[in-house]
Length: 200
Image (cartoon, rainbow, N blue to C red; front, side):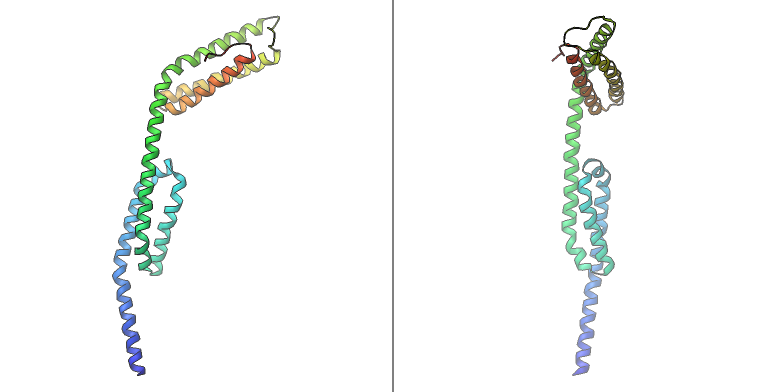
């Protein structure tokens, strides 16, 4: 009876071992497929959806950990969810790329008018600052402090506008327009402090 029990246990162990070994191949394949899928999207995901990478990376690490432990069944079982996550990552990247492309196209369209209007604002502001600096009596509501602040602000505006122009030359119209808007808003603020009416 005891011999029979030992034989049964040995047979069961052999069956389990065979079962494990038959799943080792699929487990290896599952990890390889997941890794390849993740590697293919990793760079763009880092750029467009960095906050979504961690979950996929952790799931893939879990699969590898289970493989090292010999739990091939767990690897195979986890594979569909991991592949779905990688697919979701690809979709998220494509969506963000489309948004970025649309934003770039809009910025490029907006840059034309801005590249004319904003420098004109800065030029008008510079003339006003120059005139007020030479004036012995300032207009009502305009203080010496406002003129001094405007001079400093003007230098900053010119520097930011140079950055905007450089960005547009490099084809980065999104950054160019962001900087152009900063110049426009700040110029309008300084204009008001000097009794000017900013263009709409």
